[in-house]
Length: 111
Ligand code: 5GP
Ligand code: ZN
Image (tube, helix red, strand yellow):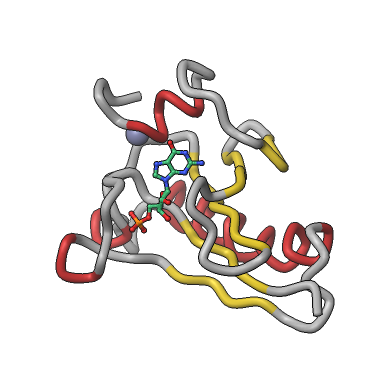
């Protein structure tokens, strides 16, 4: 939990969101400004600033990233992406990151 982090506020329900999945480790909710018909974010509950702050020797980071990645096709399919989808992780300002709480974009089209 980090003060002034939008996604931590979504996690503790201070800011509303359209949640599509939650478990003890992660939540997923629709992006407020969708770039494709299906566009949601998978967010670890742990406040990690960005992908490059994850450590190859940290088993919890490896587990969380594995879960986020394996969850993406399950949720994409449930959201109607029957023909495919893509995942994107922006890293730091130069990589287009705007919210500094690690998240995975999952985007696709039901067509
Ligand atoms: P980034 O560029 O950091 O990878 O993407 C951040 C994403 O978060 C953007 O696609 C943006 O539309 C989304 N976003 C920012 N603020 C909110 C919010 O308050 N609620 C939701 N649902 N999405 C948000
Ligand atoms: Zn946060």
